[in-house]
Length: 168
Ligand SMILES: CC(C)(COP(=O)(O)OP(=O)(O)OC[C@H]1O[C@@H](n2cnc3c(N)ncnc32)[C@H](O)[C@@H]1OP(=O)(O)O)[C@@H](O)C(=O)NCCC(=O)NCCS
Image 1 (cartoon, rainbow, N blue to C red):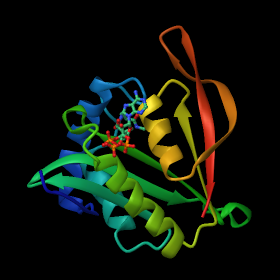
Image 2: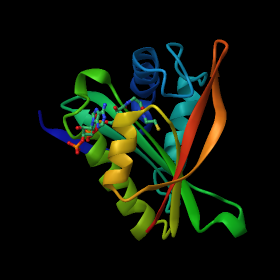
Image 3: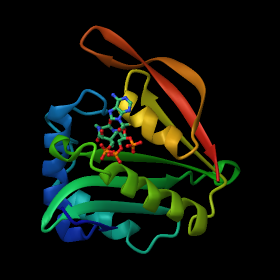
């Protein structure tokens, strides 16, 4: 397996939307399930194009050959008094878990956040029982700063999330 991390291209939109359906069906850790995200291919392509040359936001894909097996995105907060901060999301398809793809995505995201976006603080919310993700974030220095009780509701179940932050 030779995984390459690179910026998404507009023509990846359909594969990325399909991947959200796969990842959404494989875990309850994401904000969407098996239907993926309700965005058209055209809108996804325009979003990807809109961040392609951005120095505040980035959208990355992990490729194994031609197949996209994971995604990572970083967004800086646009409001002036929050613009020193950003947040990100990562997702890898299950057949590629525990092979270092998430680590590679994190390295690229944090490098972008620090050296291009010039963010000072990165924050995230993660299901409090998502041990693999929490392990990964702690590996990069993230610390838990609180709990958001009932951050998700899946069926009738309220699900708590850890809030974590990293000073770059
Ligand atoms: C979280 C996720 C992105 C990690 O991706 P990945 O490619 O498996 O990540 P890596 O292989 O680089 O690292 C996983 C690490 O977690 C560790 N890990 C796996 N399961 C674990 C568990 N149950 N408890 C503790 N650590 C665990 C692995 O040993 C590895 O640690 P290491 O790098 O010290 O060896 C992936 O599991 C995923 O997409 N999950 C579903 C979506 C999701 O939860 N996204 C994050 C939402 S906040």
